[in-house]
Image 1 (cartoon, one colour):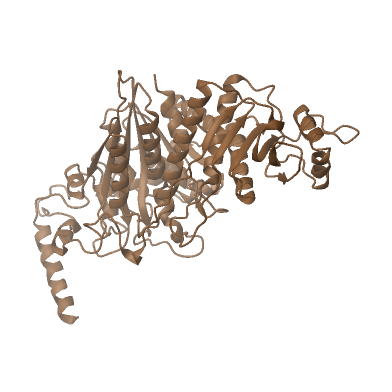
Image 2: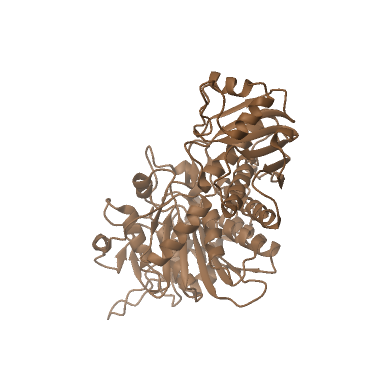
Length: 582
């Protein structure tokens, strides 16, 4: 052991001497400016160390081996969806699920339903439906469900699913679909029919969107990520009939769209749920390449190595990656439509920290959530999930760049230290006053790269700050943008997708706390307004001619109740790209 330590010390000393007189760029790409007696490289490149050591552990392998854990191959549930116009009382299957509002549950003086559909079904059931709903105190509130096995209908069971006071948006109907999936799982039902108690006031366009949201909710509610469980039950739900919302080719296309995007959300969930000993930066890059290969008619992949990132002077990104035995991988997928001219060029940039220890500012103490830091690549999962959906949907007239600077933020002798100065690829220098504010450092170079692709609009997504969770809670993402036009586009997309966003201020006066005495900026400012100063930091790396939005999704990336990822952001991103399709 003593011989090994002495040898290692000698090697490290020699490496420092060699690096000190090297003319090649350092890891952080930061050099002292010319001075009479100062002409040496400021920092040591651990990538030379990678080469000397042969990159131990998993550096040359895409697949991790730590813990001997690999995900089981579990197929995403295949559910056959169809739209029908038939007498719901005659529909045959395991469960007829009826979506009811609190208004639909109103009863007359004889305690019979006033709603025409419920009245008809209750008559077929000899009044038992109204009687049971009263006994169970079912009033149609959101989250309520009542499933009964009663003779008299074509279906084996009838279920009442609460929609709340009214059901008018995608969020409500997607939750309705998830509640149906839960009821089907409890009843071990394979065939389900879905109908709304009131559809008279719904326009034809709204019927399409309603059916799509129900399908999406049902798919996502049925899916369980059991890849890392030694034993799991397969879902039994096989077919779903949407009743009373119309038929025809437009509805069929809408249902297919919902299935495609839902499969992309499931893919995003699986990425975020995968532990860091399985999902390394190399594996994330491999998954991105698979997407491009699957949809090679419209998608291409470029994966940059650490050496190539050095050539592009990505010192901010590489500084974060410096301590890890797993090298960084810079991911760039490009979507081009199969035919026709391109009228809009867009970029989606996702934070890709497959694990964040905090670096030398290591995460410690209650509430630090270090055990959840596999979720720190939630932004990249949203971006790659959107790429998968776009590859399936193939919108015309729009070119989209999907960009992820993937790496780990770890601790070692080659790691970035508090007080170090790194240089981003646009030449701006950053004094690192906190190594746990690493996501913005990786995004800095990713945003510069995105601007260099000639795009007109950029959205970046990141699990960036705990401050945003404090401000908006666990289910709402914070939005920062100087562009009202882009804000309107994204909020329209979010409303259609059913995801919750809230626009936050970009208060320029807060930038004062981000100034450094020795560099262009520091990477963290005052404790107050931490989400705002993080967004202001990112703004320094975006071309002024490009419309840009930052989405801080630290809250909604996962569900504390379900202890799993949500796939947040994918639905909104796909809707936004669709808006720009000709």
